Length: 418
Image 1 (tube, rainbow, N blue to C red):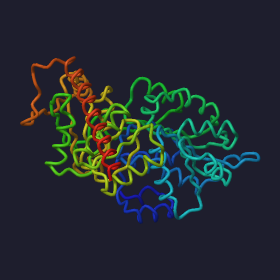
Image 2 (cartoon, rainbow, N blue to C red):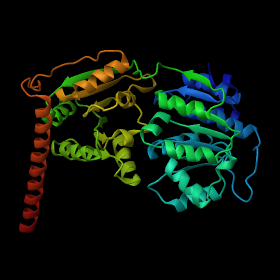
Image 3 (cartoon, helix red, strand yellow):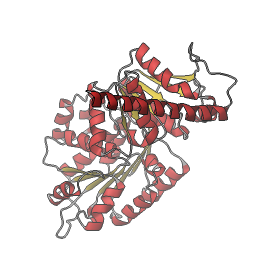
Image 4 (cartoon, helix red, strand yellow):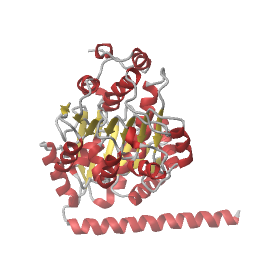
């Protein structure tokens, strides 16, 4: 099937041809006709399946071919709303919709926290066809009256499972009260827990179910491996893998924001240029780190699950779970960053003995046992118990922090002598 077979507007077809799109992905083949037909959809689609085009292209087509249903009295009208859980994903969706609609007069805007409200207000006042936003910033605009959600004809809830994981359910309900009941709703989620399904069926009308891959599954193009290792030697093993195997563009996941910052600094001391992105960073700092990673200036990008949501990195070869995720579903999200668009990727997990229950939960979710391999020189010490692993890990962190502090003090003294 080609995109021409989907009967999209000629201006959209020209744009996607210029972008190099040739054959629709499975989720695009299934979703686009249903959206064009005016159906609500409930789609199970993981990162990298092409879901932005699956909802973006038909919505743009409808706005080009169908007049607005109503006009906002005295206020600029917003016809379409795409709600995303993170700033990175909002920016990614905005960039994609802008590229699809470049041959049209349609206006796309984006609104998320960490950046100036004034710039967003100016864009909204100029009139917007589709607004891409995060929940908190959208409600900020709604409260001050810079956006009227009652004119929304098309509502997209993107990555709904992550929305709920991040505690946005209250904000979502507040937003839903402001949106017109007569609308078309498109619901996308990588996983479908009971809570996600309850939310979906509360906002959808006779939805068409679209599931292009088994829920909670990993892409077949991703090679997965688990390396058991003592907790206090994880950083050492990570540096060895990156250096000895000449890995470039490695996305590394940690559980905590502090852990991501510390690991980036430690890899730097090992001669591996690294940067961290997490919720404590400004949007500008996060974007700079991502740009440097994409350009190759930074070799390892250390991220938390929330900060990494929505990252769009083409041909990413390696994902490393430095810390095993507490939620098994997050493992699927993490490794979904590699092996995209048919390319081959590798997902490496560094597992200490106290994390074995987390691995079992992941294997139960995948209904598969992940291969394990002991690396020579990094074999775990079988005499160390799980509680001792945790204690030694904390002690190692303190020793490294003390050593780094000493290095900085010595550098200061040397500078003074000069």
